[in-house]
Length: 605
Image (cartoon, rainbow, N blue to C red; front, side, top):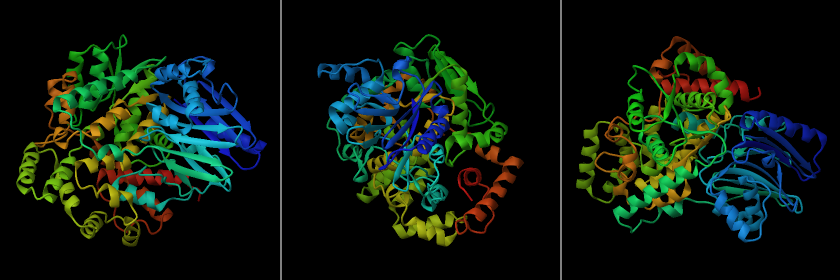
């Protein structure tokens, strides 16, 4: 796990650009405190910061040159199946001088070119410079686990693992992007496609690759999950459950490959409990460490479920207590770490968990991110599922499912999603407008029609389309926060539920195996529930990883800051906000503070 940055240009790189790239690398020090390197030649300058995970020797230093000397690589991530790929490449005549996955990645690219991407099981973003052709190749993993941003400074391409490094380069348009701000304020969404909060900075889309050479800059998608969601498996329920179990076990054990200490985050929910259970039963390292956020005495606290799991397995559990006070003290450091605004104070708690991971000497942390998307875990998925029955005229079946959802008394979002899914577009716009009174009317009307969230995410007609929309337009904002929160403390976060083999397998599973009778994650419970505890399996109070947001934001300091932030945002973003008092909704107040902090620190006046 690392960070990299660079400038590619049709002209020779000069001393000034070399100094700029060095500053870009320094801005990413937190991503790689173990080593640093710079490569400069003709039309490219590359900088790298290394966090040593596989092969801790100096052999893994980057930028990394291929044995033939033609290619220079900077890379962030892990190729979990690197051992298997290395053996395949050896059988084809490749020779290796290191034990790193870095060398395997570059040799795979030398052997197969862009087609090597299909062979990687991992999370990655990388850049390869072809010294002979004077061309740059950029690529990003299937689901956007690892970040890669780019911008243009005249004819020069600037790229980096985080936007803060790009801000070290003059001549890049850092003005606010109002479309990104709209999705953030209206839908609580960021990182939807390729946009960022800066108008002139873009994100290489997940599952995409790009080439920069004498013909210009070209982006194309190399991985599209849609093709896996348009088919239905003809396997039996028993075969699907067995396949699911085998894939989750394989994904988890693959992600234990490391030459540094490994632990896992443990929330008290099903996703992280299963990961901890698999590790415990399949040969956990001695005194295996897990990490939890706790809120003693608050209804949102989940540590009783963590305690139940500890009674079943032998592992250590360390806990942190995020509070309104700690969030207040850390608010600016947190904002700088995440680069762009986030929609909920929940992400601050994740940040504190990662701080605890680092403090306890663990460098790699497995996490349950992606479980809700793969196994249909969000309660509002019921709404998409029921709407499908209504559209097909199966009203009796729809009403029965709606009744069972109501009886569990945990899925209020499902009713709103049901109505929103069935309503015509004009009704959706009016309903949104009424609930988003804090936005200027003209701003709302100008932006809602171009929003991918409005036009595609909420246009899903059934459960499977909704799951696909999550992978395309929702998951990445969670992954950005996972990456920034962990890398702020030089910790590598790994997400077994986003192993592409598992995602593709589950995409074809019938809807009825995923959720029914007001219950979510049916297949996960059936296939893997024995790794958890009865108390976790019986839960009907699924709340997701969260914080006592209402209590925090009712603190007088936070309320005052939110009101001041609202005034600041109106001044800096004229025409975006309506002239109305700020809502008492805790997330609205948090978002306003986040936006104001970003404007103050990241946007030139």
